Length: 486
Image (cartoon, rainbow, N blue to C red; front, top):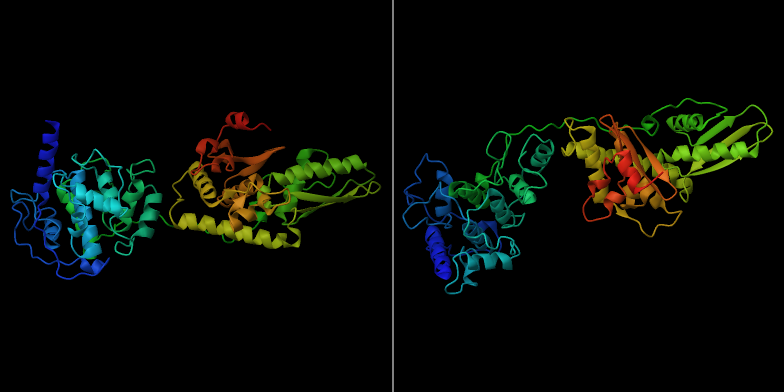
């Protein structure tokens, strides 16, 4: 009995779509020129008349030879489209593009007694459009997300260019448009691809897609005909927020925050840290102290180590080494900060790094991935993701490798923890987010103030897998301590 039911369903599917489709006489191989209206619609569908919703689309399907409607003479505009029917339409479009014949692709896979959709599915699978992800669903009503998944890979980009790419990218990232589609929505990428190609613009002013809703045959017809007819494709009437302040004019000195009061004879670690901040704010790498009289070698050594610890908190500045000269008799101390192995190239490295970070900042804003409406936490998360997607951990780095500084991340796409943290802190500071670095003998990470809350962020550990691990983003100090003490 079950087999009979399935067979009946397959026959019903075939009856809905029809078989007598129009085939062009001559065709190019893999060409959009094969999308030609070879018939003229003159009321073949009793429920599709001028002025009716989706009239133009249902008529176009007939004229392109992609549908002859249902057996009862209707198109069924308001009826649900099944997953199998979407597969059949997509395969016909693919076959028409590839061979100039909507049925040629499926014909090679036809077997007597199989479900109506089966040869079309086999054809799409042979073309790499689908695999088995929709198995068991072919007789069920298709959701709009499932429809997007089938259609997004049906044609190559040359036949379905992303004409709305910049607009959709900016609008979607602004969180004002397509708000019912998130990274967790099934087939999110495919849905956005249809917006970018002008296949859909959503159901309201904010471009809502309704991914879980069942798609009607009329709504599906609209998407299908836009696949084959560029004149029917749409551009959303959206005005996303694009104004931003460029970071191109940022300077290293302008990124220094906190107490930068200079004390010639610092007596505490806090005063030495303020001296280091003063030096960096002046864009110098030399710190001179004057204790005004004799000092011990221990005093000079203590000051040097405290200064080195302080400069590490500004790891984005890329100083990780200090040399020190001093006079025990006069009490004068001179510290020169540099980077291990960078040598005389460090000024050029710093110039490149700041320019590269500013370019990342500006690009993320111009693309709408960061907007003025975002919280600091949301902005910091975008930069966290960018670092993870654009860098790999340099497991072979030696103690004198450039992977210890932000330059390597921006220039070569690889780094270790101090390079990761330096690049991340630089991006946050260009965003006006207060942050510093915190370290223990084995590791270094970020401490930032996000929306008034102190958070620990370990972007290095967040980049250990194929996708960013957000367990290490915006940790409380207690959570951070559980991962690495300090």
